[in-house]
Amino acid sequence: MAIKIIGTDVINDQRQLVNITDADITAGDGYSAKTHVITDNINFTQPFSTCTLTAATTFTVSGNAEGKSAILILDTSTTPYTPSWPAAINWEDNTEPTWSTYRKWQIHFYCVSGTRIDAFAIGFDALSSQPTESVSLEGTTSTPITFFDRAATNNHDLVMGWRFGSDGNVYKYESIYNVGGNGLYLYSSSTWNNITPSQTYYIRVTNFGGTVNLSTSDSDTLNSWIALSSDRDFRVRDSRDLLTYADENMVMKVEIASDSGGSNILDTGYYECEYIGTA
Image (cartoon, rainbow, N blue to C red; front, side, top):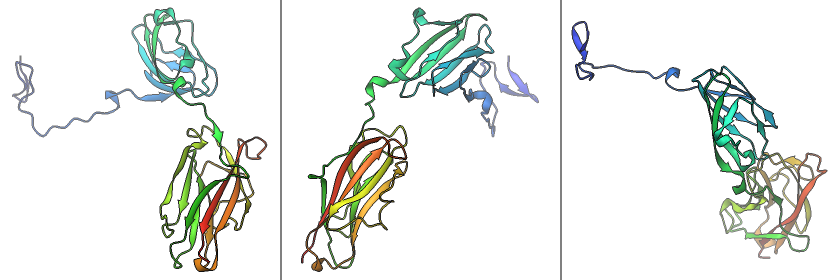
């Protein structure tokens, strides 16, 4: 049987839309589940939720009734923290997942009755595949990590140095007016941190030796602990005519600590800038 509006078929006997033009449909919240961020309660009236653990956590349930279902995206963090569950939850094959195997889980709950909730979990982002976070620096007092460059012209200052990035990487910097002229580029992604830092670390850089010192106007604060939550640059600048100086170098001592006061220094390294003069 066709369906008509003001005598005109809009759905024919084959249940097809007909005679409809210039029509719009807007999909609102009712067409998809809203995501709720939770701490420890799985509410079956809010069927899609996410939770990131900051400690071992015991979950509760609410709004559960026969036929209802819910999905939880659980992040146990890199620690990882262990979740605990109500007795009503019946895990697939009567075996609760080993939560330390994966960092992130997609967990499906189905209410068989008001007192029984069947559940299964899919793990992803395996913790075993993630490297153990490690802070390390290079160079020694006798053999620093050396970066060579030279000025290309007298018309511009020689500027070169090192960056310790908030992303955990170490970079070299050379002015585009130097002979190399590469600007900022990656030196190492395995030091100072082998992964993206999971916490705030602190760096202290001091002049250690050589014929010149770091430029205070081109460097972040020297001789003090500063947070590595921001990129930290340490550079040499020489404004002299390159015909007036011979080879020059700067050695800096780099320390990284896990606390702002430097009471727990994780590693120490030595990095050098060396550039060539023509005197």
